[in-house]
Every structure is written in C-alpha cells, then in structure tokens.
Length: 597
Image (cartoon, rainbow, N blue to C red; front, top):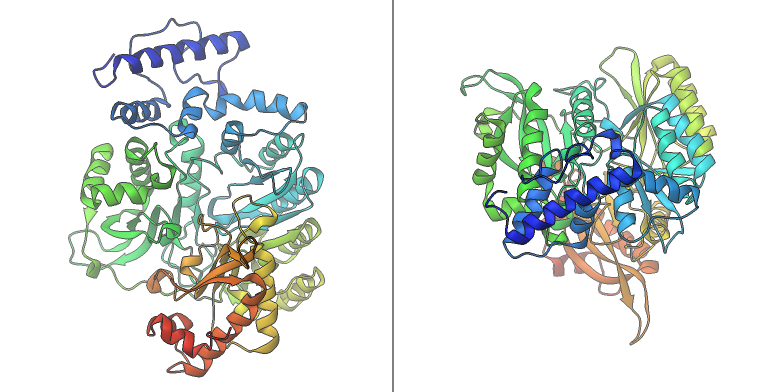
C-alpha cells in the first residue's frame, strides 16, 4: 500500500474491504445499484489503495486520521457502511414497522428520509426537483403519495423543493419508491450530499433573463445522481444557477453560485453570456458566496462544478461538523490556492476577468413571485400563487395541477420564497385562473409583509428548532396587516435554530428562535431579532437589534419597527434595509420606540 497510510490504517482498510466482501457474499448481492465499490465479492483482499467511487472519501478520512484528527461519528458511519448499501436493510425495517434511528437515521437521509422524533414519531421526506420545476401530473402524484403515506399535506421549502411529513415507519420506503414511479427522486436530498439544484423559477419564460437555467440545472442534477463519488461529502453542498431573471434564485447563499452575466468585448474572451463563479455562500455562518473573478462558458458549468466538489471532498473537514463546509476551506486556503487545485482537477486553466468586464446584471423584482406577470412569449403569463408559509393540502395540490393542465403549460414552478408559479396562462384565462385558485382557498395577491414572509418548519416538526416559527410568523403577518399598510416590499425571515433554514441573516427583519428566560428556572419560546439583511446586488448580513423577545411580543415589536421606518425614512423609495443600515442599533431602538416594547 502507499506510504500515505500508516500501518494501522492499512490494516483497517484491508479488514474493511474483506468485511464488506464477506457481508456481500453472505447476502448474495452487491451493493446499491449492483456496483460493488471495491471489486467483485469473490476477490481476495488486495494490497492496494482503495479504488472505485468511494476511494476519494476513504482516502480523505484516512489522511485526516493520519494528521491526528478524530473522525466524527457520521464519517465513521459512512466508512463502516455506505448508506446506499444499507437500502435492503431499510426495506426490511419498513416491513417490520421500524424507524431508522441514531446513525441509521443519518444513513437513511441519503435516501431522502428524515426521522424527526421527538417532535413527531414519523419520517419527513425531502424531494430533489431540479430548478424547482415539475409537471402537473407529478405534482398530483406527490399529493396522492402524501395522502396515502403521509400527513395529507406538503410544504414548499426555501430551496424551491417539496417536503412531505408524518410518514409512518412502514410508509417511508413505499413513499420514496413511489416518487421514482413518478419520475422523481429523493436520493441524496439529505445528509452529506449535494442538495437539489436550484435555478431561476421563471427560466425559459422570463422576459429579462440572460440564460434559461433549466438545461444546466437538469444536467447537474443527473450528473450527481449517476456518480456515487459525489455522495458522502464532508457536509451538505448547495449549487444554484441564476439566469438574471425577475425572481432571484439566491445563488449567493450557495456553496457554488453560477450567475449569468453579459461579458463585454475587449477583455480577451468571446463577448456574450457567461457564468460568473461565486463560491462559499453559507448565510447561516454569516457569509455570502464571494465572486472569484472566474467566468465559465455556459456549457462548461457542470465540469467546473464537478471539479470544485472533488476538491472539497478531498479537503473538507471531517473532524468538526461545524467547520465542514466549503466556506471554511476557502477561509483556510484562500481563493487562489483553492482555484489552483480546481484547475489541477480540471486539467485546464480557468478564465479570470475583472468585474468591469461584465455589464450590470438586471435586477430582480421582490414581488414577481406573487400575482400575474407577462412572459416573454406574447399573450402568456405566469401566475404566482400565495401559500401560507409554504403549506399545501393534497386537495389544493390536485386543484393547482388541474388548473396548470387546463389553462397553463403543465408546469408547476416552485420558488425559494416558499410559493409556486403556474406558467403559460393566456391573457384571456387569467381572471378564470385567479378565481379557481381562490376557490381552492389560495390567492394570487398578498400584502408586502405576507409576500415576503418566510419561515422554516419550527419545533412542530424539527427537533433543532427552539420555537414555533411558522405559528409566530403567521401571527406577525396577521397582526401587522391588521393595523398598518406597508407600501414597500419587506422580507421577514423566521428561523428556528442556527442552521438558519429560513436564512434569517438575509431578511429585512430576521428572527432566530431562542428560549427566553422569564425567571430563574423557566423559559418561553421567543426570538432574537436582526435587521438590515439583503441578497443579490443588495447582499448584506443582518445585524442583531434585540435579544430574547418573547414570541407573543414579536407582532407588536415588528409593528413598531415598521411604523418607525415608515415615519422616518428619508424618501418614499428608501427601503427598510437601507433605513436600518444608516442608523446605529441604539438609534434604531429609539426611532422604533423599542425601549418600552
């Protein structure tokens, strides 16, 4: 074996290979997909480095151990039994009515199932839907599965995805197999994997887009699904394509953000539309994806993304889950060293251009995900449907699918704003579509507060959350809309824990859940409140304004903040974020009359 491994590591790897082969021989079948990662089961233990798709991960683990670092339990779990190889065991557990728990709960997330106890004695399933677009018949099919195997509803997530909850132990595997029957999948949608690929939700129909992101998101989606080496990363990994359309894809909150830009003539590359590469976004850790100066030809995005992921696989931290994201490799190495490694994997240099080589990108519209908007195709429109914090009943899903097929182009387009669009609606049918959507108990219009309201699952369905985020977010919107008219877009993001699934750092107003002490022994649900966040051209990490606000007090506090903004803004078009950024925290508390809140 190579000198890269210590004698103990050599013995471990030899024993591990031998054990895997013995287990497979006993079972009489190879691993997931019928492809053993280390060769045929009949082969004798070999004196060689690990080979096959898992080798890059095993080498990275061994290298960190050689450096004196202790692998976290999740890494050891992946090494002891690759989660794809456990599928047969999970099927038997389903037949026996048993949930996967402890490290098996981690492994089964590779298949898209999450045991969410103790909040619910059930699975949650997260799909992966490239570019957030699925066909109406698939949407209807998910509704049928949610009704048969789940709680009878679904949620649209902040990654333009669907989640289904209250799935029983015996129903988990039938649910994910039912997705495959629909041409969908949940594979790799959880744990240490590349998550569903997001893109511009109006791709292909947007009058201002530079790039239709759908084919690129689709290609990356299938590239991931068909390469086992791209599973089991040091931590989760997000990739987004923003085609410069009217609805933001929030690509700057991703590990890799591909931003469509128009490159001007005279900079040494062919003028036209390219991808500009941004890396390291993780707003829960207070960082946006930063511009690398690299531009990528449109048709080379998947090759570049693949190389970036492989460098991360080899270099990411496997001993500290809190530091195991791409951001921390970039912080430790610097961008140039990282990009040099990417070029080595690619076998070709990356093109670097100054910022002035790109024309200004078209700006997004913060309200374009709600209501009726003309498409680039004459006479057609997309209709943005308001969902109450992302929730849909199965009946509503079927109703929307029918509307899409009858009056639209058959697509259902999910957005990162926890709602959906129906595209291809003729001018003459708009009024009918709006009426039929209203008949489902949904709407196509919302206040500026409700339109920008985002909340994660909260402690009703997530063991990490400290508060009922959706419940309190709903109270805030109802209260504010009942007492004040806010005439500019305001994004309020309510998240339940430090994982920041609702991205509280990019909200005009961000709330992160906390247990608020009320005496020496007791606490109640509440929040810390931040202000001034933004995204895209207005990207900014929100700063903390208040700590330990009881949940029941948050509606009145947010009302005071918005009243203070409307009364004190420098001009009618000054945004809430701009207003808060030009004042210090103490001054804002005075302007918002929060001393007595």
